[in-house]
Length: 221
Image (cartoon, rainbow, N blue to C red; front, side, top):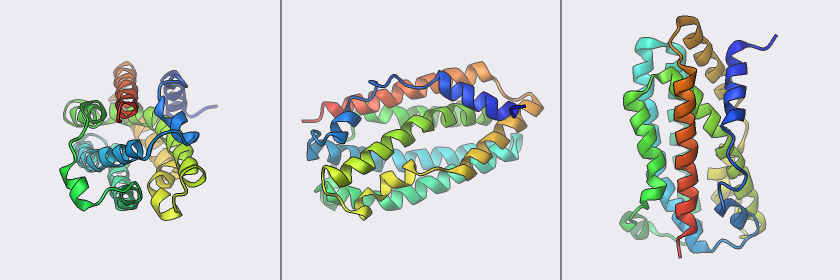
């Protein structure tokens, strides 16, 4: 018999799987036709996304302490992961030809920052358990994109392992995070604190905002 929480996570992830053509930039990176300026913009947008998401996850963890310790543990792990990813981002940014002054003066794109803005909205307004379900569904697509980009950076652009480490981090399997997600969703099911329909709405919006992220980058000259 399938574990109820795992079944819900799997079916929600399948239902929210993005259109294969939702991210037009990733295939261009994969075949090496995306210019270095676009890769640089990707790196610079992430310098804004990563710290914003980390703070949102820390806030969700603090909120989860009052309603569900398993959800709190899940968001603590996410926040710690964002911190580790941030440590790996600088090497990618520098490999794209962006120095510290260039990073400091960069003006982010609204289409790219809609995603972390919505994650912050979820941190303030949504039930932590519902966010666990929505984010887990979204992460599966992001992990696949990162695996493709990491391979292309090496094969098409000649980037070093160090400069690819940011994408390697998100591409690798995360069994402990999966375990925490199942525990958090099951805890919410057991206590009646999960609204699967609402979580599906959150996940659908996250997928659209992620598509906006990639679309905005395709317009970088």
